[in-house]
Amino acid sequence: SYVESDGPSIVDNRGEYLLDEAPLGQEPKGGQDPVDWIHQKTEESAGYDHLEAEERFEAYLAIEADGVAHMHQPGLHVTFDPAGSLPYPVVDLAVSLLKGGGIDNGGFVASGMEPDAQVSIYYLLEWQVSRRITSLALLGVSLGLAFLVRYEAIFFTIALSVLIALHLRRQERAPYITVEGTLFSFVAPSIYFVFLWVYFNYIIMGDPFFFLSSQYAAFSKEIARIESSLILSTQIGSLSQTMAFIFQSLLGIFPAAFLVGLLLALSGFKGKKIFHYGFLVLIFLIPFLLAIFVYQGTTSGILRYFITVIPFTYASVALLIDRFSAWRKSLQSGLAILLLVAFLISSVAQIVAISTFRYDLVSHEKDFWDALVYNRKMPDFFQEAGAAGAREVVAFLNSAPDLYRDILLDDYNGWAIILLYGDGKVFIDQIDLEFWDALNNPGKYARYILVPDPTVGRAVLDQVNVKYPTLYEQGADFVTLVKNFESPPYYWKLYEVRR
Image (tube, rainbow, N blue to C red):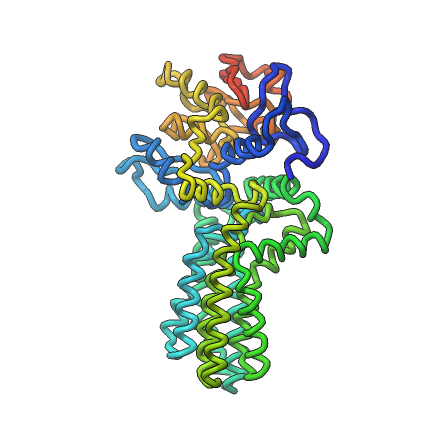
């Protein structure tokens, strides 16, 4: 966890708490409650959590009703401007997604992917019953859309392709030409979305695989590695600890998956049903991949990453019901009661997990549960101490809005400034095509530079600090210090670029 390994104190020479994530192992000092400390840190990073925008989106839009709603997350970075301000909204959106592109295993399965999984399940089951090619094509479309949400959805396409081919060839003895045509009907729509995304990368960024090879992709992987080392330090490199963590997470998210998985295996073995084995694989595909990433230290293993287990488990019950229809009535009743009890236990298990798991694994679920059950107020980051620095910077910039423009700012740490200011066009950040050029040649693109204290939390990963590691403390010959902000957690400095 955050407090297990060695690290410097989070009390700086000004005697104040640094509320942002500190380097590995920094722990609360001066009697501050560790749970409250982790709560503060988690809430500050809420705007950066992977693809969980729906959890905070309404609050962000409420704040940004008259301006831009700016969110920065691994794999997704979109700026929503006021209506009518985008001359080419589709192109701008594509550019936004491209600039935020990059595989971040730290947020492997976001909640945004679950609807695609549910739609895919529906069309898969419909095809199994009706054999309509339209259902199979729509299944491919749904997985293609899932790829645009999370690149790792390609694993589902591969798994389902193998499942469909084995089912047709081994179960139904279909000729190879039938298998080939069926697979083409399924795979072609999915591949279309992949090639479309590659084409957009080529025409916009000049590199068809920009979403895999960009600087931001490498940056996202580094963030995922750090998040993993903070939360899962004991699991990294340990097979036994990794498997124990995955097992515990599955028990917390939906323990009925184990019972349904066992019934699928037994039913598939007894009736030689390849589809049953296929759904068994689909249930545990994400946990298997997460186990690999946990072992490698490239995911934070948050509980909601396992959420696709739930829809695939329920879909598998539909297969089992069809199989059980030929069994004795007494056995059908017994299995139905067993499954109902398992689902009830799973609901209770989720509540127990939210209440007992480490806060950094269930932070948003815990906040929502406390608000729902105990009538506690949902945390508002922008009203807490963690946003004091952003509020001070925004107040200063608003004092001369016509003067302070073209500000180079890495929104990894500065997203709250952009969000509170209300006009994303004032800043040159990672959503902008010229960000990396401006970083390399500030005098040509930027008028000002905002840089956070690199000794605070993960601000050392701020791209301005990465490019100019001594800029914050020593300045540089191409800038002049304008303002030294005194509010935590980042203690920003504003420099004017000499042109």
